[in-house]
Amino acid sequence: MSTTNTIDALNQLLVILGRSFPQYLRFARPYIPSGHERVAETFQEITSAQNELIDRVTQEIYHSGELPELGKFPADFTHSHDVHIDYLARKSVSLIEQDVARLTDCANSLHLAPAAKTLAEEAVGMTQGHLESLKELAHGV
Image 1 (tube, one colour):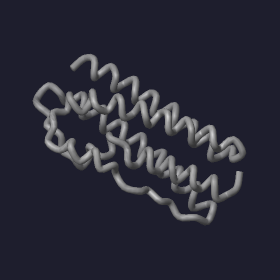
Image 2 (cartoon, rainbow, N blue to C red; image 1 turned 90 degrees about the vertical axis):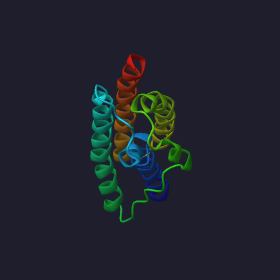
Image 3 (cartoon, rainbow, N blue to C red; image 1 turned 180 degrees about the vertical axis):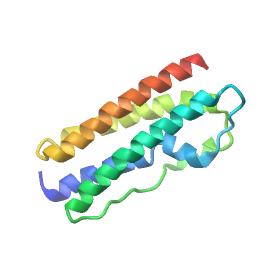
Image 4 (cartoon, rainbow, N blue to C red; image 1 turned 180 degrees about the horizontal axis):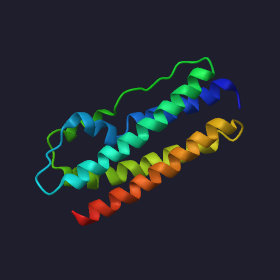
């Protein structure tokens, strides 16, 4: 795989992780009534894990002599301000399912770049774990 294609795929990882719905919710300030703090804590745990991987992907891009490109949040996310956290947990399930599919495609495209592929596969596994956590929460709310 050419360096350009590898960097494009790594930047795609950055966009998927860094502009995910949980990342957006850090700025959206959802409504969190008493007794629903666990949902908010789960979103915080997700974004913390994503941020750690984002840092590693960013370093991989820098080591290649390129600059990371994080992109913008999807415009559809702007409808999520001041919405109840339980609704957002349910909404996040379908969005994170899409992220898993996109991350899997990204990982599959990196078959000739082992270090980058490892990061992408880690992102897939991590995001699948986050998806399961959110599914449990969404069913409980």
